[in-house]
Image 1 (cartoon, rainbow, N blue to C red):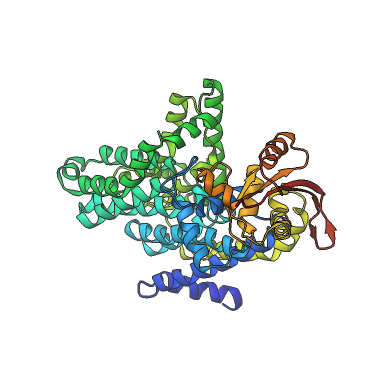
Image 2: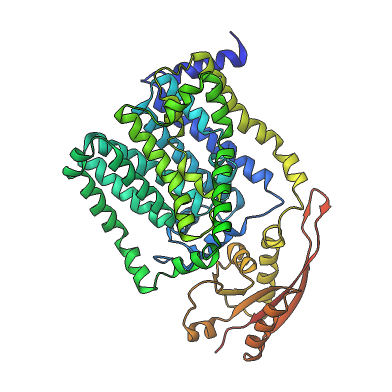
Length: 500
């Protein structure tokens, strides 16, 4: 053996050696983090930050126990990250990629409880072939934050059922609460794990032990500040969710449920095809889906219930769901697929999987400049031109007043972009709790609108009319990329100066 084949063999030997495996995986995950961060930075360079990402930056400027749309953990993490890291696209993609990297490490620990060394390495490689752990994870939002939290909750839940250890039960409760702080979708994880425990043949011993009640107690304790906030706000995020995704016809709900199932299957198609080719016998896959022994059946129930319960809930509640929301539900997939004792994983197959898992990010990194070029006109103006708009607002504000810009309102995506990139780190007024009127009057504000948005401009004009020295600036912004100019976009910037 020589060249890449020899290096793969040495890597395979390190990953299957108990003395070196964990250290080697940590190094590989660090490289994975760097490579995918570099890919995102280059491939998305002409596109700017997605509005989901700039919205979370806006939330992070107003730290709270909850927000109109979602619970607060994504904003808390962003606030902490940008306290120590610069506000830059590369650092934001680095934060985003920390989520799948952490999830892959937890998945490695889960697989260590259930699979032999050969299958454990193959399982980790299979997970990296699911787009949720790389491409989709680059868009930091409340879904990506769930990746490590669902994995950690599942790890400690499975251990607590098997051993009824109080420490594992404590960690399971804390992780489940943090998952709820990430997104309310995590209720399906919690409900699914309850179903898994009830289906387990050891349920009587489990529920008679302190473990489940420690999990529940710790979870409620950790979640209690947010529960208090929900009561005080009349469950505002639930109202928002039902307004946007609920109150649909049964036909629409059923169509979305089918799309959820089909799309989710599509996202994991490559690992499924690879394992099917390795198994060679359909009966092995059927046995993997619902095994007979207790430990493997517990894993299967913990996998299927959180994945499928949203379908039942969507049909019962006549709500829409999307396959992207299954992002955090796949940690157990390799354990499910590879656990049958009759399914062999030969070293040569593991090495091929490792080669594929290593080649994918490297090939994408090499292709990232071309991807950036061909997608240079795909982003919406608020994404592609957000940083340039923020610079324009900052410049106009400085011409009006020496005071820092503290508040930005107007069209939501534009306001979030300006808040993200403005040098003064202002706060957003859109979809956020309004500051006290005297504070807003003393500070002033900038209001950003698309030039063609008559409603936004009229609202801005009404506010400006009440304040002397207000100014309206009309601006047209064009973003260039490698000597290629994008589509011009007009903006109306209304500046309301600080009051006396």
